[in-house]
Length: 557
Image 1 (cartoon, helix red, strand yellow):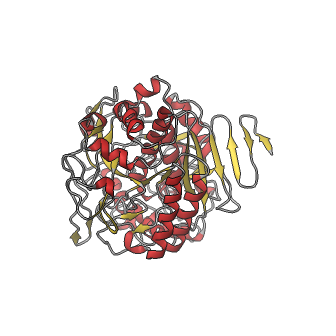
Image 2: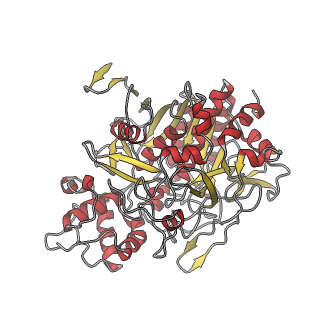
Image 3: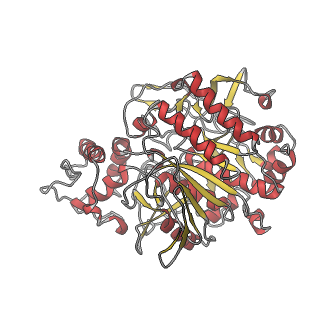
C-alpha cells in the first residue's frame, strides 16, 4: 500500500513501514520532559522552551501522572517552593502560579536530583539536567567552562554547547571517509526500540519530522528509514521517544548514506527479565534478516548478569550466534551505572525505583559475541571539531544515586575469557567489558533535534552509552561498505588492531578517569582507565580514517 501526505511517500504492509525522503523519530526521554514542560507552563515559568509551552492539554496515563506528581513533590522538597502541586491527571494546581527559573543553579540541582523520580520511561540516560531550548544560552569562553563550570556540571543544551554532527565527524576521523564516498551507502543499521502510542512532543514525537529538522539544521542528506512492527503489535510506527531519536541521529551522523531500520518491540519489554530476554532474542532474530549491523541501546537490554537464568542466557547467546553466522555485527551499550549492573526490572530502575546495587556487567554487552561500547567525555574544538583529549565518562558528569553515572564496565561472571581477549593485560579468566568506547557524557554530547510538529524544535543533549552504541554501529556500516561485504563478528579484528603497532593510529587511548558509582551512604569501587585496554573504555574511542581500513583488512571473510 502507498500513501502520501504531500511531503513524503510511504510503502507499508502489516508489519513494515518505509519512508523515502526526509524523516525522523524519537524514543521516550520519559516523563521528565513532561514534568518540565507541563508544570512550568502551568506555573508561568519563563525559561521553558517555546516549543513546549502549550502542552497543558496533553493527556497522561495514571502512571505518568503519578511520576509527574512525584517529580513536583521532590522539587518542592529540594527548595523549589513555587513548583506547583499536581492533580490526579498530572495538571498543575490552580492555586500555584509562582515563577520557576529553570536556569537558576538551585533549580538545576533540584532537577538533577529529582529527575529519576519523574522519568517514567527508558530515557533516564537522556535526562536533561538543564533547559531544553530552541535558542542557545550564551556560549562559554572555553570548552572547559562549558563542561565543568564552577557552579557544578551542566548538560549541554544548544548547538553552541553541544557538539554538532560535523564536529563529531571531525573529532573521530570520519570526515575524510565521507569525503571519499564512504558514508554507509548500501548498508542498513537496525535499531530495536520500544513502541509508542501517544504523540506528546518533546517526550514522544514523529520521527519523520525530527529527522527532517535534524538534516535541515545540520546539512545532512535525507535519512532512509524503515519501521518493522511485527513484534510490537498494533502501534503508531512513526512515534518515537528520546532514546530512538538519540539512536537514529547518532547513526545518521556517522553513516549518513546508510539506511536505518527500526524494529519495534512491546512497550512492556523492559518490565521484567523474562520480557527483556524475549524482546532481545526476538529483535536480534528479526534484525538479522533486516541489515548487517544491529545496535542495542535500551530496548534489548536485560539488566545485570545475575538477573537472567542460565536458560535465558543460553537463548540470548544462541540468537547472537545465529547473527554472527550470517555475518551480522551486534553492538550493545555497556550500561550507565559504572561498575554496577542495571536493575533486573530495567524499566523500574529507569523510573527511579530503588534497586540493590550489584557490582557486575550487563547483558547483552557481556556476551563475547557482542561488540560492547563504553563511554567517554570528549574534549574537542567547538570551532572546528578538532580532537583535543578524552577521559572516561563518570562522576561528576553523571547523577549520583541514579542509573546514570558512568561508563558500564567490569568482568563477567557468566562467560569465560574469549580467545580474542587472550594475552590482554588486565583481563584474567573471564570476559572483560567493554571492547571500545565513544562520547557518552551528557555534558559533552552531540546536539539532538526534536520537532514539535510545527515550526519549532528542541535542541537537547545526547548522552549515556546509548549514544556510543549507535555511533559504533554507524562505524561498522562504514567498514562494511569499505570492505564490500558484511564484516559480521568484528571483535577478533578489534583486538588484533589493539595489540598491533597500528593501535595508536586507529584508537584514542583513554588513560584517565574511572567508573566508580556513588549511592546514598556508600560508594562501590569501580575501575580506572589505563593505557591500552581497560574495563572502563575498552581500547578507547575511534580514529575512523585509520580504523576502518584496518577493520576491513583484519576481519575474516
